[in-house]
Length: 232
Ligand code: ADP
Ligand code: MG
Image (tube, rainbow, N blue to C red):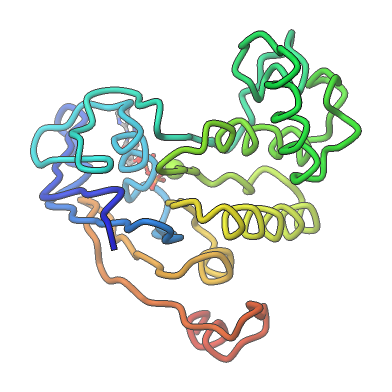
């Protein structure tokens, strides 16, 4: 399969602090990869580097074969907080402030329905719950059909029930579209539920410890033996 994200020999320092050492990571077209590891091991830093938001001290990062030199239009990013523009409607946030001519508005509306936000196209962010706002952030990340969708702990700020609903929605939407996705989480259950492959990082400095393919019966079960054994 074609490589969508290629990270080779990556090293990253913040001043005297070595955060990443010799990180190699590949995400192929259509794959869902989850990156897990203890707090502070460098997961967010690695994701931000892939998003073109950080400089590096060594190694290479490429998206679809092109070296990453800054934020890339073909890469969608979703953070822990929705980061919506409070003065723009849901539709305008998803369209990234572009003027909503009828054809564009129809595309946004279709995605909004797919994401379970049908009645909120013209709502303002302050009218949304935290879970709904995060749905909007995911819709914004997906709207331009990115080559790669990057998500950094997207569900860790919502309650447990909302989190399960959002996980199910995200999985359905990315599987339907065949979106290539790299999602960071510290929740092993979430990683195994979502991923085709779980990449485990170890800290100080951050390195890839191992990669675990996830082979669960379809549709994915939250109560599978594989999940139980990984939980230890
Ligand atoms: P994780 O997301 O796995 O919890 P991070 O990538 O956020 O870890 O952070 C890895 C390490 O780098 C931590 O020790 C953190 O304190 C440090 N760090 C992250 N961002 C910065 C920054 N902008 N400046 C200095 N140190 C940072
Ligand atoms: Mg983090």
